[in-house]
Length: 379
Image 1 (cartoon, rainbow, N blue to C red):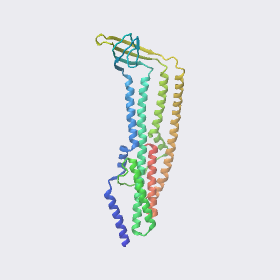
Image 2: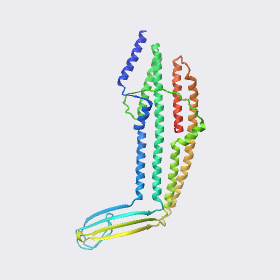
Image 3: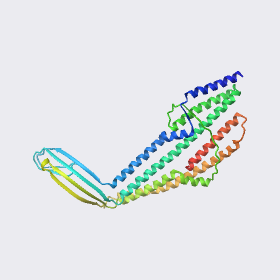
Image 4: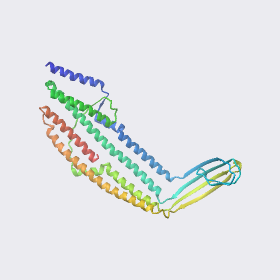
Protein backbone atom coordinates (compact mmCIF):
# COMPACT_ATOMS: atom_id res chain seq x y z
CA UNK A 1 0.00 0.00 0.00
CA UNK A 2 2.86 2.35 0.86
CA UNK A 3 4.51 1.60 -2.48
CA UNK A 4 1.33 2.42 -4.35
CA UNK A 5 0.93 5.65 -2.43
CA UNK A 6 4.60 6.54 -3.05
CA UNK A 7 4.28 5.86 -6.79
CA UNK A 8 1.10 7.93 -6.96
CA UNK A 9 2.82 10.79 -5.13
CA UNK A 10 5.83 10.66 -7.50
CA UNK A 11 3.61 10.73 -10.56
CA UNK A 12 1.63 13.65 -9.13
CA UNK A 13 4.80 15.55 -8.26
CA UNK A 14 6.22 14.92 -11.73
CA UNK A 15 3.05 16.26 -13.36
CA UNK A 16 2.99 19.28 -11.04
CA UNK A 17 6.65 20.21 -11.71
CA UNK A 18 6.18 19.83 -15.45
CA UNK A 19 3.04 21.98 -15.37
CA UNK A 20 4.92 24.76 -13.61
CA UNK A 21 7.29 25.09 -16.58
CA UNK A 22 4.74 24.82 -19.41
CA UNK A 23 4.79 27.95 -21.55
CA UNK A 24 1.98 27.05 -23.92
CA UNK A 25 -0.78 24.47 -24.18
CA UNK A 26 -1.42 23.76 -27.85
CA UNK A 27 -4.65 22.56 -29.40
CA UNK A 28 -4.88 21.29 -32.97
CA UNK A 29 -6.33 24.57 -34.23
CA UNK A 30 -3.54 26.55 -32.55
CA UNK A 31 -0.91 24.28 -34.09
CA UNK A 32 -2.36 24.77 -37.57
CA UNK A 33 -2.64 28.53 -37.04
CA UNK A 34 1.01 28.74 -35.94
CA UNK A 35 2.16 26.64 -38.88
CA UNK A 36 0.36 28.86 -41.39
CA UNK A 37 1.95 31.93 -39.80
CA UNK A 38 5.57 30.90 -39.16
CA UNK A 39 6.35 27.60 -40.90
CA UNK A 40 9.39 28.14 -43.12
CA UNK A 41 7.94 26.42 -46.20
CA UNK A 42 4.77 28.49 -45.90
CA UNK A 43 6.76 31.74 -45.58
CA UNK A 44 8.97 30.86 -48.58
CA UNK A 45 5.92 30.27 -50.76
CA UNK A 46 4.34 33.54 -49.60
CA UNK A 47 7.49 35.34 -50.75
CA UNK A 48 7.22 33.55 -54.10
CA UNK A 49 3.71 34.96 -54.49
CA UNK A 50 5.00 38.48 -53.72
CA UNK A 51 7.79 38.01 -56.28
CA UNK A 52 5.30 36.90 -58.93
CA UNK A 53 3.12 39.93 -58.19
CA UNK A 54 6.07 42.27 -58.78
CA UNK A 55 6.87 40.53 -62.08
CA UNK A 56 3.26 41.10 -63.15
CA UNK A 57 3.66 44.81 -62.39
CA UNK A 58 6.93 44.80 -64.34
CA UNK A 59 5.19 43.28 -67.35
CA UNK A 60 2.43 45.93 -67.22
CA UNK A 61 5.14 48.62 -67.44
CA UNK A 62 5.83 47.51 -71.05
CA UNK A 63 2.59 49.23 -72.11
CA UNK A 64 3.99 52.63 -71.11
CA UNK A 65 6.58 54.78 -72.93
CA UNK A 66 10.23 54.91 -71.86
CA UNK A 67 11.43 58.43 -70.99
CA UNK A 68 15.15 59.17 -70.52
CA UNK A 69 16.94 62.30 -69.33
CA UNK A 70 20.72 62.35 -69.88
CA UNK A 71 23.34 64.86 -68.70
CA UNK A 72 27.01 64.69 -69.70
CA UNK A 73 30.01 66.95 -69.00
CA UNK A 74 33.41 66.06 -70.51
CA UNK A 75 36.81 67.72 -70.14
CA UNK A 76 39.18 67.09 -73.05
CA UNK A 77 42.21 68.26 -75.00
CA UNK A 78 42.94 67.26 -78.61
CA UNK A 79 45.69 68.25 -81.06
CA UNK A 80 43.95 66.61 -84.00
CA UNK A 81 40.32 66.20 -84.98
CA UNK A 82 38.74 63.57 -82.73
CA UNK A 83 35.57 61.57 -82.83
CA UNK A 84 33.94 61.50 -79.43
CA UNK A 85 31.84 58.35 -79.10
CA UNK A 86 30.56 56.97 -75.81
CA UNK A 87 27.59 55.06 -74.54
CA UNK A 88 27.05 57.95 -72.15
CA UNK A 89 26.69 60.50 -74.95
CA UNK A 90 23.42 60.90 -76.83
CA UNK A 91 25.20 61.24 -80.20
CA UNK A 92 28.63 60.73 -81.80
CA UNK A 93 30.54 64.06 -81.77
CA UNK A 94 33.32 65.24 -84.12
CA UNK A 95 35.67 67.61 -82.30
CA UNK A 96 37.87 69.77 -84.58
CA UNK A 97 41.57 70.05 -83.79
CA UNK A 98 42.55 72.55 -81.17
CA UNK A 99 42.49 72.56 -77.41
CA UNK A 100 39.15 72.98 -75.73
CA UNK A 101 38.21 72.64 -72.15
CA UNK A 102 34.72 71.26 -71.80
CA UNK A 103 31.97 69.66 -73.81
CA UNK A 104 28.49 69.20 -72.42
CA UNK A 105 25.35 67.53 -73.68
CA UNK A 106 21.77 67.10 -72.51
CA UNK A 107 19.12 64.90 -74.03
CA UNK A 108 15.52 64.13 -73.21
CA UNK A 109 13.91 61.36 -75.21
CA UNK A 110 10.74 59.30 -75.31
CA UNK A 111 10.10 55.96 -77.02
CA UNK A 112 6.77 54.20 -77.26
CA UNK A 113 6.16 50.68 -78.59
CA UNK A 114 3.37 50.73 -81.15
CA UNK A 115 3.49 47.18 -82.50
CA UNK A 116 5.69 44.16 -81.81
CA UNK A 117 3.56 41.24 -82.94
CA UNK A 118 1.64 40.97 -79.65
CA UNK A 119 4.70 40.24 -77.49
CA UNK A 120 3.72 42.71 -74.77
CA UNK A 121 0.25 41.19 -74.42
CA UNK A 122 1.73 37.68 -74.34
CA UNK A 123 4.33 38.71 -71.76
CA UNK A 124 1.60 40.10 -69.50
CA UNK A 125 -0.43 36.89 -69.84
CA UNK A 126 2.67 34.90 -68.99
CA UNK A 127 3.34 36.98 -65.87
CA UNK A 128 -0.28 36.64 -64.75
CA UNK A 129 -0.26 32.86 -65.18
CA UNK A 130 3.03 32.63 -63.27
CA UNK A 131 1.41 34.60 -60.45
CA UNK A 132 -1.53 32.18 -60.37
CA UNK A 133 0.91 29.27 -60.48
CA UNK A 134 2.77 30.69 -57.47
CA UNK A 135 -0.53 30.89 -55.58
CA UNK A 136 -1.29 27.27 -56.50
CA UNK A 137 2.16 26.15 -55.32
CA UNK A 138 1.41 27.90 -52.04
CA UNK A 139 -1.87 25.97 -51.77
CA UNK A 140 -0.02 22.69 -52.37
CA UNK A 141 2.51 23.48 -49.65
CA UNK A 142 -0.24 24.67 -47.30
CA UNK A 143 -2.20 21.42 -47.69
CA UNK A 144 0.92 19.33 -47.08
CA UNK A 145 1.98 21.32 -44.01
CA UNK A 146 -1.51 21.19 -42.46
CA UNK A 147 -1.69 17.43 -43.05
CA UNK A 148 1.74 16.90 -41.47
CA UNK A 149 0.77 19.03 -38.45
CA UNK A 150 -2.46 17.05 -37.96
CA UNK A 151 -0.69 13.69 -38.19
CA UNK A 152 2.06 14.80 -35.80
CA UNK A 153 -0.45 16.28 -33.35
CA UNK A 154 -2.55 13.11 -33.28
CA UNK A 155 0.60 11.02 -32.90
CA UNK A 156 1.51 13.03 -29.80
CA UNK A 157 -2.05 12.67 -28.46
CA UNK A 158 -1.84 8.91 -28.97
CA UNK A 159 1.51 8.63 -27.16
CA UNK A 160 0.23 10.83 -24.35
CA UNK A 161 -2.80 8.56 -23.93
CA UNK A 162 -0.55 5.49 -23.81
CA UNK A 163 1.56 7.14 -21.12
CA UNK A 164 -1.57 7.65 -19.02
CA UNK A 165 -2.50 4.00 -19.54
CA UNK A 166 0.89 2.79 -18.29
CA UNK A 167 0.73 5.13 -15.31
CA UNK A 168 -2.72 3.81 -14.43
CA UNK A 169 -1.56 0.21 -14.46
CA UNK A 170 1.58 1.05 -12.51
CA UNK A 171 -0.59 2.34 -9.68
CA UNK A 172 -1.82 -1.20 -9.11
CA UNK A 173 1.41 -2.93 -10.07
CA UNK A 174 4.22 -0.62 -9.00
CA UNK A 175 6.87 -3.35 -8.97
CA UNK A 176 6.41 -4.28 -12.61
CA UNK A 177 9.79 -3.45 -14.13
CA UNK A 178 8.57 -4.10 -17.67
CA UNK A 179 5.78 -1.52 -17.36
CA UNK A 180 8.20 1.01 -15.88
CA UNK A 181 10.64 0.53 -18.75
CA UNK A 182 7.91 0.86 -21.36
CA UNK A 183 6.66 4.01 -19.64
CA UNK A 184 10.12 5.58 -19.71
CA UNK A 185 10.54 4.68 -23.38
CA UNK A 186 7.16 6.24 -24.21
CA UNK A 187 7.99 9.39 -22.24
CA UNK A 188 11.25 9.73 -24.17
CA UNK A 189 9.44 9.14 -27.46
CA UNK A 190 6.87 11.77 -26.52
CA UNK A 191 9.63 14.30 -25.84
CA UNK A 192 11.17 13.65 -29.26
CA UNK A 193 7.81 13.90 -31.02
CA UNK A 194 7.16 17.24 -29.31
CA UNK A 195 10.35 18.49 -30.96
CA UNK A 196 9.01 17.31 -34.33
CA UNK A 197 5.72 19.13 -33.68
CA UNK A 198 7.52 22.35 -32.73
CA UNK A 199 9.67 22.16 -35.87
CA UNK A 200 6.60 21.67 -38.05
CA UNK A 201 4.64 24.60 -36.67
CA UNK A 202 7.71 26.85 -36.53
CA UNK A 203 8.00 27.49 -32.79
CA UNK A 204 11.37 27.64 -31.03
CA UNK A 205 12.53 24.13 -30.15
CA UNK A 206 13.25 25.12 -26.55
CA UNK A 207 9.60 26.18 -26.01
CA UNK A 208 8.05 24.06 -23.25
CA UNK A 209 4.60 23.04 -24.46
CA UNK A 210 1.87 20.58 -23.72
CA UNK A 211 -0.91 19.50 -26.05
CA UNK A 212 -4.64 19.28 -25.39
CA UNK A 213 -7.07 17.35 -27.53
CA UNK A 214 -8.47 13.96 -28.38
CA UNK A 215 -9.06 11.76 -31.40
CA UNK A 216 -12.65 12.03 -32.64
CA UNK A 217 -14.40 9.38 -34.69
CA UNK A 218 -15.92 10.66 -37.89
CA UNK A 219 -18.39 8.55 -39.81
CA UNK A 220 -18.01 9.42 -43.47
CA UNK A 221 -19.99 7.98 -46.34
CA UNK A 222 -17.24 7.99 -48.98
CA UNK A 223 -17.15 6.46 -52.45
CA UNK A 224 -13.87 5.80 -54.26
CA UNK A 225 -14.95 7.22 -57.63
CA UNK A 226 -16.36 10.32 -55.95
CA UNK A 227 -13.05 10.79 -54.11
CA UNK A 228 -11.14 10.58 -57.42
CA UNK A 229 -13.45 13.15 -59.00
CA UNK A 230 -12.98 15.44 -56.00
CA UNK A 231 -9.22 15.08 -56.31
CA UNK A 232 -9.30 16.08 -59.99
CA UNK A 233 -11.43 19.07 -58.98
CA UNK A 234 -9.66 20.25 -55.83
CA UNK A 235 -6.01 19.14 -56.00
CA UNK A 236 -3.84 22.22 -56.69
CA UNK A 237 -1.33 20.06 -58.55
CA UNK A 238 -3.84 19.66 -61.40
CA UNK A 239 -4.02 23.45 -61.74
CA UNK A 240 -0.23 23.66 -61.66
CA UNK A 241 0.13 21.35 -64.67
CA UNK A 242 -2.59 23.29 -66.51
CA UNK A 243 -0.75 26.54 -65.82
CA UNK A 244 2.48 25.01 -67.09
CA UNK A 245 0.76 23.98 -70.32
CA UNK A 246 -0.50 27.54 -70.78
CA UNK A 247 2.97 28.94 -70.04
CA UNK A 248 4.60 26.68 -72.63
CA UNK A 249 1.96 27.51 -75.25
CA UNK A 250 2.52 31.24 -74.68
CA UNK A 251 6.27 30.67 -74.94
CA UNK A 252 5.69 29.06 -78.37
CA UNK A 253 3.66 32.10 -79.45
CA UNK A 254 6.37 34.46 -78.21
CA UNK A 255 8.94 32.74 -80.42
CA UNK A 256 6.58 32.97 -83.39
CA UNK A 257 6.16 36.68 -82.70
CA UNK A 258 9.88 37.19 -83.19
CA UNK A 259 9.21 36.81 -86.93
CA UNK A 260 6.97 39.89 -86.91
CA UNK A 261 8.21 43.47 -87.32
CA UNK A 262 8.45 45.90 -84.43
CA UNK A 263 7.29 49.49 -84.69
CA UNK A 264 8.38 52.23 -82.30
CA UNK A 265 7.70 55.95 -82.12
CA UNK A 266 10.29 58.24 -80.58
CA UNK A 267 11.10 61.90 -79.98
CA UNK A 268 14.32 63.48 -78.74
CA UNK A 269 15.63 66.94 -77.96
CA UNK A 270 19.39 67.59 -77.48
CA UNK A 271 21.51 70.50 -76.19
CA UNK A 272 25.16 70.13 -77.34
CA UNK A 273 28.21 72.39 -77.19
CA UNK A 274 31.29 73.66 -75.42
CA UNK A 275 29.75 76.97 -74.41
CA UNK A 276 26.60 77.25 -72.38
CA UNK A 277 25.56 80.46 -74.11
CA UNK A 278 26.24 79.13 -77.63
CA UNK A 279 24.89 75.61 -77.40
CA UNK A 280 23.40 73.86 -80.41
CA UNK A 281 19.90 72.49 -80.20
CA UNK A 282 18.79 69.42 -82.13
CA UNK A 283 15.57 67.48 -82.15
CA UNK A 284 14.00 64.65 -84.04
CA UNK A 285 10.80 62.69 -84.33
CA UNK A 286 11.22 59.12 -85.50
CA UNK A 287 9.12 56.18 -86.56
CA UNK A 288 11.31 53.09 -86.30
CA UNK A 289 10.37 49.86 -88.06
CA UNK A 290 12.51 46.77 -87.66
CA UNK A 291 11.76 43.60 -89.63
CA UNK A 292 13.83 40.47 -88.85
CA UNK A 293 14.92 38.68 -92.02
CA UNK A 294 17.59 36.12 -91.19
CA UNK A 295 19.30 34.98 -87.99
CA UNK A 296 20.89 31.75 -89.15
CA UNK A 297 17.82 29.68 -88.30
CA UNK A 298 18.08 30.28 -84.54
CA UNK A 299 14.43 31.33 -84.23
CA UNK A 300 13.25 28.05 -85.80
CA UNK A 301 15.42 26.07 -83.40
CA UNK A 302 14.04 27.98 -80.40
CA UNK A 303 10.52 27.40 -81.72
CA UNK A 304 11.08 23.64 -81.87
CA UNK A 305 12.49 23.68 -78.34
CA UNK A 306 9.38 25.44 -76.99
CA UNK A 307 7.07 23.03 -78.84
CA UNK A 308 8.93 20.09 -77.28
CA UNK A 309 8.48 21.64 -73.83
CA UNK A 310 4.77 22.16 -74.56
CA UNK A 311 4.42 18.45 -75.41
CA UNK A 312 6.31 17.57 -72.23
CA UNK A 313 3.85 19.67 -70.20
CA UNK A 314 0.91 17.76 -71.71
CA UNK A 315 2.54 14.43 -70.82
CA UNK A 316 3.34 15.76 -67.34
CA UNK A 317 -0.32 16.64 -66.79
CA UNK A 318 -1.36 13.09 -67.71
CA UNK A 319 1.34 11.72 -65.39
CA UNK A 320 0.13 13.95 -62.53
CA UNK A 321 -3.46 12.81 -62.99
CA UNK A 322 -2.39 9.15 -62.81
CA UNK A 323 -0.26 9.87 -59.75
CA UNK A 324 -3.16 11.59 -57.99
CA UNK A 325 -5.50 8.74 -58.85
CA UNK A 326 -3.02 6.25 -57.36
CA UNK A 327 -2.65 8.35 -54.19
CA UNK A 328 -6.43 8.55 -53.76
CA UNK A 329 -6.91 4.81 -54.29
CA UNK A 330 -4.19 3.91 -51.79
CA UNK A 331 -5.42 6.46 -49.24
CA UNK A 332 -9.03 5.28 -49.66
CA UNK A 333 -8.00 1.65 -49.17
CA UNK A 334 -6.02 2.58 -46.06
CA UNK A 335 -8.94 4.56 -44.69
CA UNK A 336 -11.47 1.74 -45.25
CA UNK A 337 -9.17 -0.76 -43.53
CA UNK A 338 -8.59 1.32 -40.41
CA UNK A 339 -12.21 2.51 -40.27
CA UNK A 340 -13.39 -1.09 -40.05
CA UNK A 341 -10.82 -1.76 -37.32
CA UNK A 342 -11.94 1.37 -35.50
CA UNK A 343 -15.60 0.29 -35.56
CA UNK A 344 -14.64 -3.07 -34.03
CA UNK A 345 -12.79 -1.60 -31.06
CA UNK A 346 -14.93 1.52 -30.59
CA UNK A 347 -17.35 -0.07 -28.14
CA UNK A 348 -15.00 -2.82 -26.97
CA UNK A 349 -14.31 -2.77 -23.24
CA UNK A 350 -10.57 -3.16 -22.71
CA UNK A 351 -9.66 -5.37 -19.75
CA UNK A 352 -5.87 -5.53 -20.22
CA UNK A 353 -3.14 -3.01 -20.89
CA UNK A 354 -2.47 -4.67 -24.26
CA UNK A 355 -6.07 -4.12 -25.32
CA UNK A 356 -6.00 -0.47 -24.27
CA UNK A 357 -2.74 0.14 -26.15
CA UNK A 358 -4.17 -1.61 -29.21
CA UNK A 359 -7.24 0.67 -29.11
CA UNK A 360 -5.01 3.75 -29.04
CA UNK A 361 -2.93 2.45 -31.96
CA UNK A 362 -6.04 1.76 -34.04
CA UNK A 363 -7.55 5.17 -33.21
CA UNK A 364 -4.32 6.91 -34.28
CA UNK A 365 -3.98 4.93 -37.51
CA UNK A 366 -7.62 5.59 -38.32
CA UNK A 367 -7.38 9.36 -37.89
CA UNK A 368 -4.04 9.37 -39.73
CA UNK A 369 -5.58 7.54 -42.69
CA UNK A 370 -8.43 10.07 -42.73
CA UNK A 371 -5.99 13.01 -42.82
CA UNK A 372 -4.03 11.38 -45.65
CA UNK A 373 -7.26 10.78 -47.59
CA UNK A 374 -8.23 14.45 -47.17
CA UNK A 375 -4.78 15.43 -48.46
CA UNK A 376 -5.11 13.07 -51.43
CA UNK A 377 -8.52 14.56 -52.27
CA UNK A 378 -7.32 18.12 -51.74
CA UNK A 379 -10.19 19.19 -49.48
